[in-house]
Image 1 (cartoon, rainbow, N blue to C red):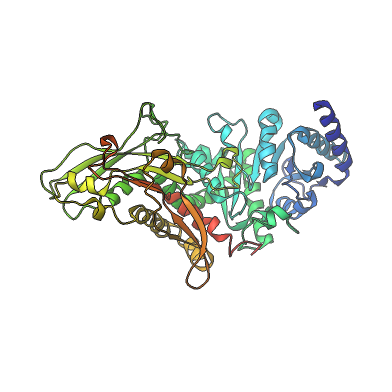
Image 2: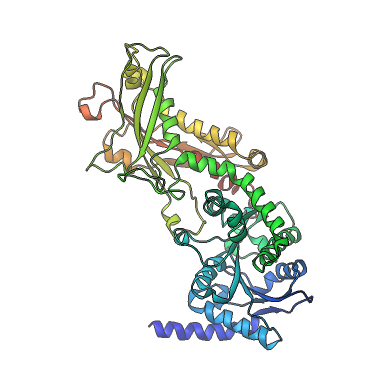
Length: 511
């Protein structure tokens, strides 16, 4: 069966070979080089001609460009090697005389070409990923080929939050940022969408998902060409390209900083995995800073006493051992001398499809399962008397926490991004808490609720409702007494909504 599939794919490759695009050099430079560009899904090779032409104009080198056409215009691991060999052979037959090859890929083409380069990168001078990124599977090893990652701020398919994640690992946390900038730079082009790496009419899946660009296609191609040419020059030993790369990386750092901050507040598992029951170390994340803030909000202490929480990541369904929140001390009176110490428990839950690392869905947590101590028990521990559970924990406190997550995101988003969101975005609103679901599995497996509804003027808004569990201090099951669990909206999910998904309704090319 595998042999039959291979034969069919071989026939398809041969059938489409006449539609490969070969661009001969337009200038004589100090060195002859070639760039092989792998197409995105359902994008014809000739739709990359304007970008390829801009790259040739920008580069100082004698530059050949080859764009192979894949079967059904979809890059495929089984045929990429044959397709690349075919265009290299074609360029050689037309006069190319160089072994200095750069590889690039757009979107799906970027995901496929990096595997090829990883296995066959002996003659590869460098790789450029366009609306794509190095996959997470390459994160814990040294990728063998220098790689430039370029994303668009308004890319509706390869979301900018995934490009931010790449910046975090390739630039933000590395010990030698100067070496990283040379070898693995990451750049976000302001105002650029996913399809602006190409030209012409976008395929249906792009038309249905891409955001509205704020720069022209010519401007986008010029910006990409400048970065790509500078990166190629840098890998060929010409440090003149470093300035443009450094400028782009530094600007990207400023742009993604609000996103990094939000994901750190969440305790993003793809920055560092959760420690869970392992010994805390620099290689894992102990808990969520946002849950620590949530416990303070839940506590609702008046002026004077304070609460310091330490959160710990654990699967909330785990029972051997079981992990429960607790307060470690008590105060005799509720004044400024009172500092309570608590421990909370959180499990971040992510979209199942994100495991495939396509950037087509949210990368932030879809819910934070937070085990908190109740407001009643916090106040009692602080020395406040006569705290009635039906009064202290009656309000939708989880809603209040989620509102503060959204408010934090709107306050800390980039100013230009937030202004765009205010003008064209779909707002979030917080609904009443649902529950109490005081049977543990019910609380665990009922998800945070996202419902699109209408506001008073008829506009679309996204309503968020928490699932909660709450018990009084005198609950009949002593081990479960004094709890107030919440399904929390991550500040990273709120921030990702502002930057990407909250724009889809009114600021996409489909809209």
